[in-house]
Structures are given as C-alpha cells and as structure tokens.
Length: 173
Image (cartoon, rainbow, N blue to C red):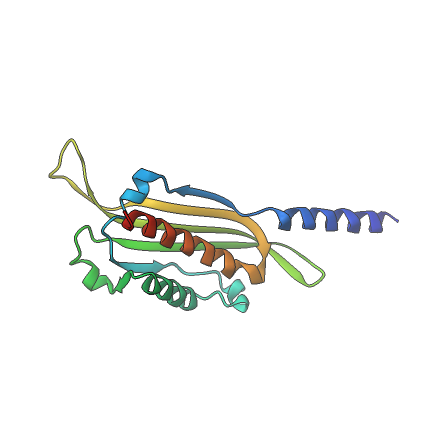
C-alpha cells in the first residue's frame, strides 16, 4: 500500500510542477526597450548546450539557426562577428540554455531549465562620455522552469520571441 501512496503523491507533484509556467525575469521596461531602438543588425552567439538534451533537437547549431532565422524574419539582419564590429555600438545577442534532469517518471524526463538572452552593446558613461564600456547587457530575459525534455525547445523559442517583440515595440515608434 505505501507504494501506491508514493506513486499517487509523485503523480500529484508531477502534475503540479508541469502545470506551472516558466518563471520569467525580464529587463524589458521602457528604458530597456529603448536601448533596442535603431538596432537593425547584430551578431548572434549561442553558447554550448548540454549534450544530454540533444535527443530533443537541442544542439547549439540548431538553436543558432532557429535564432538567426527568427531574427531575419523579423527584419533584423544577422552579422558575422567581423562585420558586427563595424556597426555603431557593436550590438550582439547571446543565448544560454542550462538544463539539468530533475527526474524521470513513466518514460518522461523532466528537466530544470534556465534560458538567458542578453542584448549587449557598447555604452558611454553619462558622467564621463569619453569612457566607452564594451558589451554591456542593456536588455535581458531570463526564464526558469521545469518541463518535459521535448518542450525545452518551445521555451527557447518563447524567449527568442520575447526579444523580437521587444525589438518590434521599440522600433515601431
């Protein structure tokens, strides 16, 4: 009997956890969005992804291609690193996906996930306008959650969409 109680408790916990949305922390207010105004080209950097989740279509190369395609469809030109150095402000965007298997039940794997997107660019200090600081994050989006392995890519795409929406809002004014 204790085994059935444990299974019922586990099922209840799993249902509760997967029904929760990913927690999202975004620096996406008016000031942060304003830093996206006028950016029509940038370089994209996707950091390495845990090989364990490659079975769900999550490779650095696939995510890089998805990200670049989404940006181009939104009218944002994707540049090589070399070409991006010639753009005022040298804007670039980074994407980091962290995963850790939380548990497996009845053939489904659940992962703790973190997705971090940062738009970085050069900035100048107001009190010392001659001081240029390289690669400061002026817009970011962080997502944390627990999800099925096969849903991680969807969460990555939601984070990318949030950037594209913020960029569109800043550049439609």
